[in-house]
Image (tube, rainbow, N blue to C red; front, side):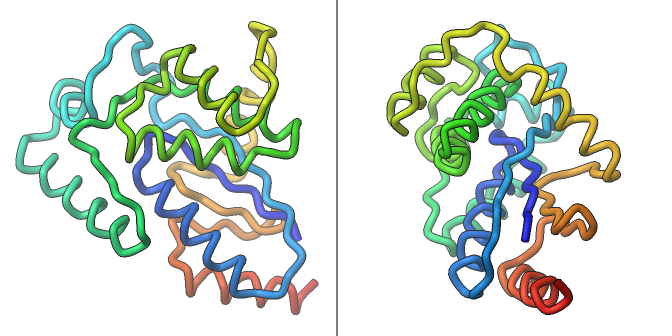
Amino acid sequence: MKLEVFSDMVCPWCYIGKRRLDLALESVDVSVEVVWRSFQLDPDYPTDVRWTLPQAHLRRYGLSQAQNDERLALVTGLARDLGLRYDLDRAVMANTFQAHRLVHHGTAHGKGSDVAEALMRAFAVEGRWIGDPRTLDEIAAEVGLPPLDEPNAYEAEVLADRERAAAYGILGVPTVVIDESRALVSPETDHLVHALRSAARAG
């Protein structure tokens, strides 16, 4: 079975989605290939600013302080229930194109999931700016990857994922696509377990 996971590492819901997927995979006896796909929620986000997530909510996306506080409290609580210690007041927003290149670099070396996990944790928990090439180099080293030295490496793969998401009709993340047919948007663990078992029986 093949699972394509479309996510963006500056989406706090995507880290929650990854943890739910991890739990679901631990609960089913199914052979699964997990492929991490790039999806930028804001591909035009500026590369030269270091706004925190609350600052980006207010300055770029037009949320009020009350809306920001409500959103962050909700997602932080859900993350806590899964053992994730979010600190979104100091999470630094970023254009994630380069970070998605790093995920593909990880995939090429059998470490795509490790890189996705490290990037999401760096953003939501550790307050590291994943728009900084130095941070990306550090994360690559932390997960045991060789340096990503080629300036344009994996750009085509990131753009291809964007087209693939459009072909599937994906508008938001996290989205899990099972065997190129069934798309689950922000599924909870129980829903994932049921879907995986159903797909296994059908296949």
